[in-house]
Length: 169
Image (cartoon, rainbow, N blue to C red; front, side, top):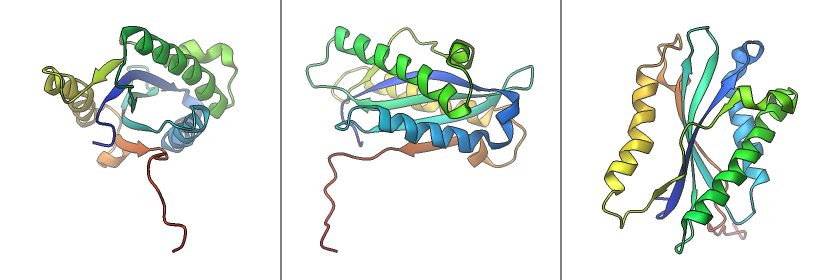
């Protein structure tokens, strides 16, 4: 509801074994660092689900939500995807204090395109299900050893540039 017309960008971030103790803290720090790297007029939301691979390393399934222009075209979506791919590949290794040359092994961009989420489209329910419900299902089936759902699933919000604050209070 925060973005009536938005793009959803899905990807995975891998956490090297040396950082698995505080992986959620690193993800939180990365998200707010990423939010600072995008244009000031933009706010982003993130939903994440944590999982463990067969080799025991932790990774996150992530969906980033950001505002789409009303006159969005395929070219605008491709430009947004290129921008976020480049920015994510630069910021995740930076937060982990790892060389940028490792970015390809840490970041996986599996979806071909950014998914437009527009309530006026007929495919909205299907698109929303694809973006939201898959992540919550992944969190419930996570192989990460915990009994606390908050350890394997979360939501983050960046600043909202449209919100006006009353500074007189």
